[in-house]
Length: 95
Image (cartoon, rainbow, N blue to C red; front, side):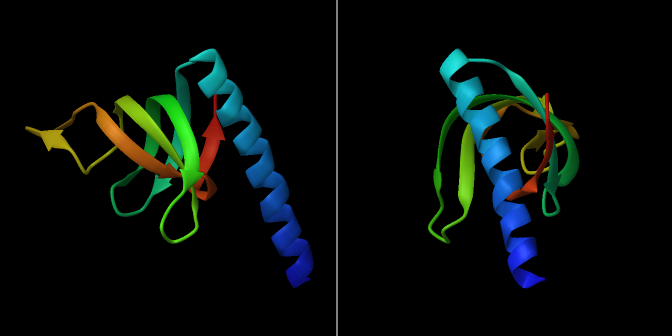
């Protein structure tokens, strides 16, 4: 059962990685539904730039967040655009 869970995570991650890499190549703006427990869960419009691994070994996406649910950078209660790192395993959906 543990092997099945690990394989399903890899399959989902690979699908997300393909979509993200394609978006980077085509310079597409994408909308993600992100499970950012520390900084808020919700939809974000982002410009993906590169994918890599964090110091903890997690697959992450570096992107410019145009607008969205981020609570980490706000002015007068409104989210402001800026550079963000998104863990691929926390991206719930991509459009």
